[in-house]
Image (cartoon, rainbow, N blue to C red; front, side):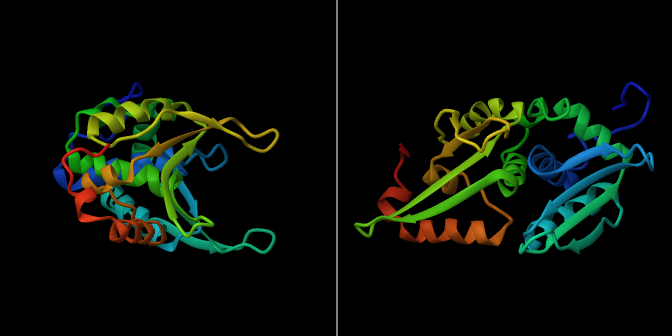
Length: 231
């Protein structure tokens, strides 16, 4: 596929070995990733900053597969008493143009993903959930342990997510606005049914999130986990 300037860009119809990596990076880009042209060096760079080492490793692995380049990886200490941050960068005009054009610069979920295989959809979901998803654990005064799975984002593409999830088979609620600090952009939240997440074999590549999901799964009764109807 060619863009308007005649530069060859990636497509989701590439070899099967790269489709899942492309879907994952698409999810990361819609989440915490950046794809832009550096006006000083005139290079086209994909960038991710994350505190999670395993998230950084997953992104590096997929970027290497897609671009056949070794991404730059360094750690830096933000101001204040904070954890080290992994900064991942790879220079690829082909990848940057692909991400920008397929998502209309983070406005939509690419149409091809709605018609992709279930496995490819899982990798896309892993990318957005590694970035902006969470699974929380709350122990109530009664001793009841409550887990909540969801994603929150302020960018327009999230409006497509309920339909994407439901067509894939994930049960989810409606988009709801959540309170944010003053001067921040509005953020919407989408809650996801945890049993449907397990049944559809979705996953995080971030171990702290995946381990909490496994903890929840281990607490489920077999009757609920293998019931024909989720809701």
